[in-house]
Image (cartoon, rainbow, N blue to C red; front, side, top):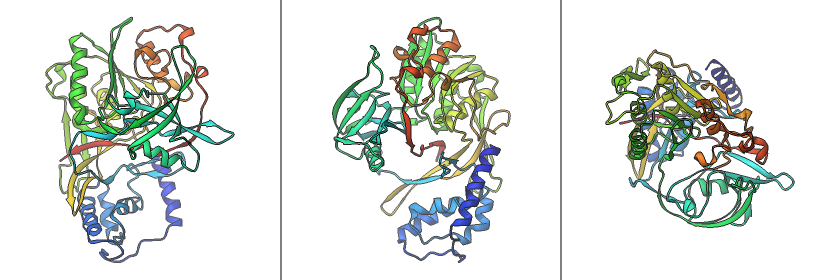
Length: 472
């Protein structure tokens, strides 16, 4: 955490030397913004001054904040000028600071389905043709029941053309967002498959029409037979909308007597603390009911919530009763994912980590929603730090792993094959996790980095970190 703070402070010092100061006027309400902008900004200010974890500095500087801007710009402008809030955000490889705190407009509809194609793309964009500077988008996940799933797209595929256009330095961001953010009604993709059972690559074209699907965060669940019977669960987000599927997967493990679990959190950037409690309460023996998984510690001057709030494991309808856990992680694993790992370790439950060092987000948000004018807003400033049952919370520089997957796959965590045991020999992370439990893979079947194309990274987009969220 110390190194992370030093790097962010250096970045902020450079920004302070090169950016103009805000006007030193007393709470300016006028400017080029609208009445709705000003009302949203008031909403932002109210919570910053009452709850933001670093509210002491906010109180000192609030009279110099420029409120004559669009509401979408205000929160970032303010927080990036503070110097004590270095744990609110992270630095990209290019030195850009990305905040965890956010305010965003939500669709007024409360339906659980999404309209779109159902493709999650990996944020690292690869170069597929150096001579022509052509890029490729790697598919990180495909949602069950989505147009992409029905069209045969699978995890590990590489999109090389969008609507007959090569992906280039000039258009990659627009094309990426057209897929990732479901911006189009129809799309044609030219796709290259990295791995087939025969070992050759193949290319195919697919036309997709946007349709409704559920973004279920239980991406894959199965029982892997072998030396031991292992429950393998791929969980891509702590989302209460997927709690039913989460409990169903764990209930199946319990009905089969599974007590050895590999939990795959390599693309899980966090989410709801209630889902994290539900997962850990089910994994552990019932005797842990009432044990503290974590503490949310707020600023002592917080005006809306208790300084300390304990979150305890709950009584569940069934318990797997594990005595240790194997978790697959990467630098995309953050927030609630890290909290589960550190919370279990705080209860002296051994956790074996496979993959690469996690993102390092040890703070969380109290989330509120409000309608202002025609806007339906979700607002989540950082309001607390997370500590385990022993009072430890210093994982702001990420959690190191026991088994480094990059030794076997230099491109990790860029995906190569679909989820599951059928591809375990080619999925270096899953293979290493199973080997740590006692499985043996013949050398001839190992899918090391030499067997996949050695992509170079063209660029990496900012990874959205969900945060540990408490909803009012």
